[in-house]
Image 1 (cartoon, rainbow, N blue to C red):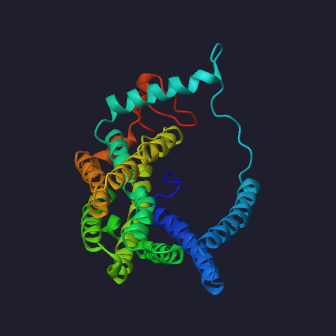
Image 2: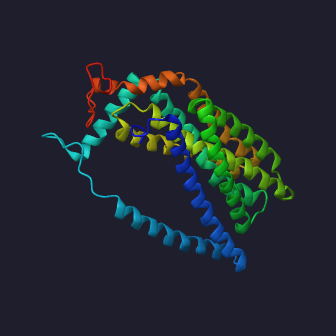
Image 3: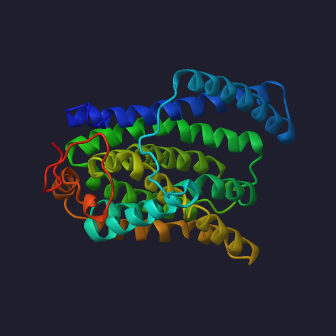
Amino acid sequence: IGAQVKKRETFTWYNSLFSITGFAHQAGFLIIVVGIGLACHLDDHRIGQVGQFVDVIVSGGYFYISWYYLTERKARRPLKEGESLAVVGFKQTFKTGKGLISQYPRSIGLYFLGLAFSSAAVDSLSSVSVTFFNEVLKFDAAQIGLIFLITLVFTLPGAYFAFWLATKTNPLVAMKIFLATVFCVNFVSFSLLTDPSKAIEAYFCSIAWGFCLGMYYPLMKIIFSTIVPRGQEAELAGFFKYSSQIIVWLPPLIFTVMNEKGVNLSLAGMSINIFVFVALILYSGMLPWDQCLEDAKVNRMSSIELRCDNFVVNEEGELL
C-alpha cells in the first residue's frame, strides 16, 4: 500500500485508521460482554462463558468474510531443481537475517531488535494487569472488564494522536516519545495502585495506559512499512511478526516469578519498564529518520542472493 499511496501523511493516516478500527471492535466486544454480565447479574464464570460465545460467533463471521474476499494467489517463487520445501524456508531466513545485519544494521535491522523489546513490554501489560488488579485491588471479572473497556476506548484518541505526532515530527521520534511516556505512566501507575482503596485511581490509570497503547500499534506499523527495503516487503513482514512476538512471554514470566517469591506486585509490574528502557536505547541507536528512508530506497539484499521478484532494479540495487 505504501507504493500506491504517494503522500506520506495519507499513508500514516491509513496505518492509524487500521489500528483505530481494530480497537473500536475490541471495545464493542467488551461493551457487549460486560453489558450482558451486568444486566443478568452473572458471576465471573458465566461472564467468561458469554465472552467465549460472543467471540466464536463474531470471529466466525469475520473469518467467513475474510475467506470469501481473500482469493487464491499463485506462488511467487517456484522451487529450484533439487530444493526441498522443508528446508528452503530456513535457508532463506538465514540469508535474510545475515543481510539485515550486514546491509541494514542501524535501520531496519536495529528496528527489529527494538521491536522485540517494545512489543514484549506493551503486549504483556494486558496479562500482567489482570493478575495485578485481581491480587492487589481485588477486582472481580466485571470490574476488570470495565477497566479494559476504558483502556480500549482511550486507545482511539491515542491512535489519532500518534498520527498527528508522526506527521509533526517523524514516526521514529514519535516512537521514542511514546516509550518515554509509557515508562513514566507505568512507574506512576504501579506506584500509586497499592491496595483496594485505590480503585478510583485505577480507572484514571487505565485512561493513561489506553492512550499510550493507542499510540504504539500504528507507530510500529508505520516505521516498518516505510523503512523496509523495497522489494523485500513480503519476506520481511514475517520478520516483523516474529520480532514482535519472540520475547512477549518474558515479562509475564518475570512478573510471575516475582509474585511467587512474594515480591511486592507494584515492583513486579515496574519490571516491564526494563524492556521499555532497552527498546528506547535501541531505537535511539537507529540512523536519523531521513537516512532510514534513504536506506529503504536501495535494495542491497540482492548482493547476498535474495531475490526481488516483480520489481526492477538497476546495477546499484536501486528500485526503478
